Image 1 (cartoon, protein in one colour):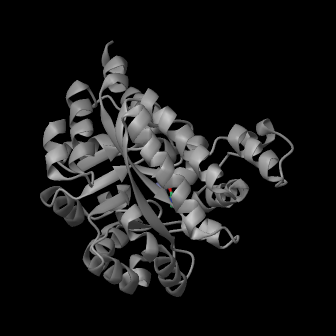
Image 2 (tube, protein in one colour):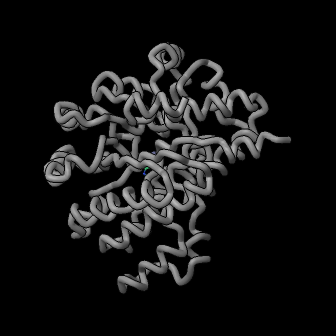
Length: 327
Ligand code: HPA
Ligand code: ZN
């Protein structure tokens, strides 16, 4: 069977990776030691053993705790470089990285420390690994609209360092509409717009992310199937869905990978992409996501592999000339 070799070797873009979710337990412990931060877990093994999630919130609690070791620019650089090394091994040639500034600024880490460490890693990845990378700043949706506006203010002196904004963290009870005004402002600023929707939240959140926030891509979006008219619309408009199969299984959105709707959505003509979300927490990076999804879903073969790779470039925020070169 040559399918695994194809999945691994094909060039691909990753569009849904929270860089804080790439912090491996070993690096969490190394940074804790370097920064004199104490962790509520005695060992790497004990921390990893805690990665048994029942839903999104049970993951977020541990994910925010893990990020507490990030204090200096070098920490953000080291974290992102470790991700880029993994991406290179998986033949990722382009990556769009989410980062959560509020997770850090709320602990007293300056915004500039966060973004400058990440930008330096992106430049190093381009130069030393041949991977192009863009940054997307996410607002934490469990926090207020006012807090999102404050974060945007802090970001404006760094406007040229990121290409877009997103919306992440706990979805239920925090609908897209909560951030209508801040997204309208970001749109005026010429930023690209994306939002997590339809991961744990209802299909209606996908519709309002499109109609109220005017996002260009939906992160996850798998619950669109609960609204057949919405599925038709997503296909007709080629709205990209950045699907994260291992994440969905780890967070119990699906019982097993065999239950995942990725193959169905792809067959329905949606611009589905495969992504790792928080690879240090969910059991693997890009190729692991491809391998496990293709192993579990018999509808997926070489044609679908090529389609998913093509979709990842189509859905990316690089300019049209670069997209042409990838075709
Ligand atoms: N969903 C929402 N927020 C997140 C996620 C996710 O999968 N990963 C990191 N923050
Ligand atoms: Zn995500």
